[in-house]
Length: 399
Image 1 (spheres, rainbow, N blue to C red):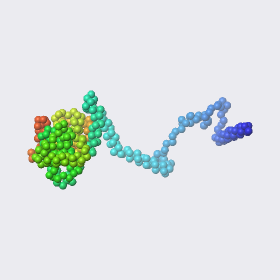
Image 2: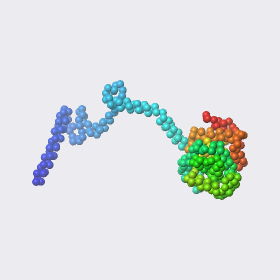
Image 3: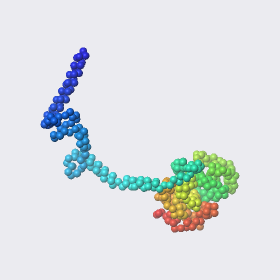
Image 4: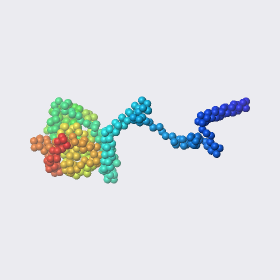
């Protein structure tokens, strides 16, 4: 039995060898190649004869070149199939279109310019790592979060939905709140937070004209409790309103305002961003105070509500740097503020218009101008730089 199986295997192998020999002999015979002399015969594996020369398999692989597609031209147009000719035309058209795509070229130019600007950016936190209170390791991340968070508190054009309140009434209220804030000697943050509470509340609730002042003092009461170490008492606000509202009324309005604001009181303020921007600009005390003057003028102006706090701070500092220091808005300022000079133009234009309006003798809303005319604020509202032609230039629409 074993012998029979062994014989079958041998017969199978011999048949396979015979087929190979037969195929090879047929192939050689078809080529009609003259047999080499005895001196050229060797046991060379993977060799063949081509035009009387011995060529190895490795040499064949080296000589193999990748086929290149034919390109469309007068000489080759007849050789290309219709489908392949169409593909070549489409690729050539796409190549020309890409070459003429100026938008992509402009994008590359902008990327290169951004990379060059990045090399000019100064690390403004480099000297603060030894002071743990400055949080130098997390400063950039904190301000990125604040810029993202401020968008949750955007104010729409809410006065169109108010039946009894107009822009003039709001301006009078804020101008009066500036005086109350100064009378109580409260922190700067308290004033900005007060006006933010007023705008956010009016954007959601319809308020009669007789209660507008009540909304103002209630907002200041809440802001004082949030920011101040020693907040004014409710009786102080009853007195400052000349007994127009009693304590229970203010308490009730306070509870309602908290509910309307959804108890979210810690919104980012202009001052937070101005301090960061001024640090990036290495600005002087006068330049920083001038920017604060501009920002408080924007508090009174209803048209400035549409600007984000970070944009107001950047625009105020931009104009202050231009008027006092003749300084450019460089790559460092653009990086830390996230605003380019072109983006700041609408905000800067509005600030310049407000400054010119405040310098007008017929203006009745003078609380901010009088406040910054004091020695405590370096008398920046009386600065000669606010009467130059450069300020009128920035107030125009063409710069």
